[in-house]
Image (cartoon, rainbow, N blue to C red; front, top):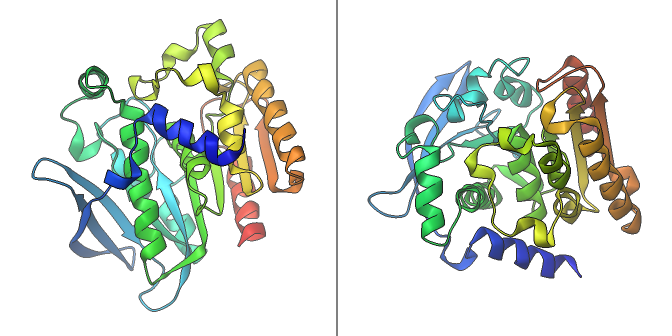
Length: 299
């Protein structure tokens, strides 16, 4: 099966209709953040739907690569997009400063049930969407694709250098968005790459939130098959083997399968891994250094 067919299948499972995925956008404010101009935006579809996001770039005149930053979950619904600016306990520091110092613009969308969007909550929204034939994960991905549209159309962004990045839930979002949208140059994801079937066997899958439920997914796809749609583009995957979400066997099942896909695409050099054998569901200094080196390589 070719990649176009597989992407269509994924979009069908996610209940995403790109033709109707249209939102207006509005700039709410510009403020100073660490001597950078922080832009606060919203996407608007109707009176009830407001999707907030941050956009920040190194300066106001040049053209830059960009990162679509996908925030994490961690059971802390209050953080949302502010993770970009303030970090979280599982990260070494905030990533806004990290990217801006490397002359990379960054955008972060507040996912449904997080930050200013905590009502309805994850359980409630997952159920209501499911009962209406949709799913929360599909809603999240469709909103992140709006972020890709924003970056791709922005005059300050280099269209050939748009990267997805995320930790934990954000990691899953990162490789899904890159798999679905070929405008993404590369994907970086930390602490969420493992074979879902094996997580189910180990009964560790239940640690994931309701948001990650996509009915029918494993009938047609595996984790590696989804991430494989990024090939031959660049991809960096960082995991800790003491993490229950990326245990040794679950990770290596997906790693081996993904390496096979990249070999078939004759792009093995574009797939990189950083594995910490003694760390868990946290970012390590080794991960941060690997991310830095990977960005230097692809940009």
